[in-house]
Image (cartoon, rainbow, N blue to C red; front, side, top):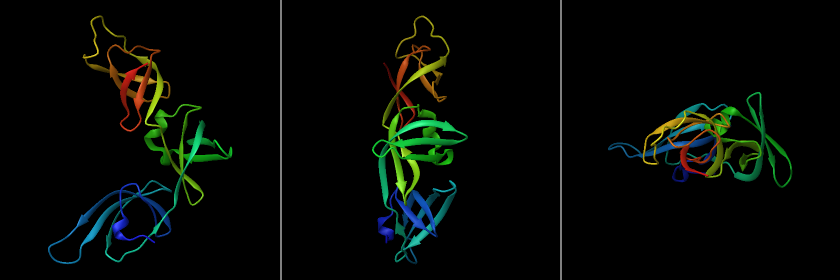
Length: 185
């Protein structure tokens, strides 16, 4: 069992029969009355958010979270298919649980699948991925690395801002935490 002092961002808890991820929390100490923790919880089944206040003495179950190395196989009908690299077991995760990470997934890419209570609940991408630019506006003579930026569509469908010198067909490195351009390969 967990207590209020265990709450932190990213913690997976079981509350009212559902798995929730703590998105945000704030310790509140009013001038009068008992201190409490105000949280924003994300339901890992349907993606809904819940605002919940926990006071001292409230308990909840902390879900055991496991991360397994997996390979992204393909996307079909809003579901993403992954294969465990050790057991070859397949995990199916719907697009609500993947969120924006799905735009940076490329077939064959290795990542980690988050598992709680024998269910795949999300993924963790590597910090940096290399993707090919499928379309962007052409550069203009005189563009430099210190110049402006332009939108570029990547092979996965994601759109990121890139420097003006980046052309179609270039491979670029993207930081998956911020979804920003890092460098051209």
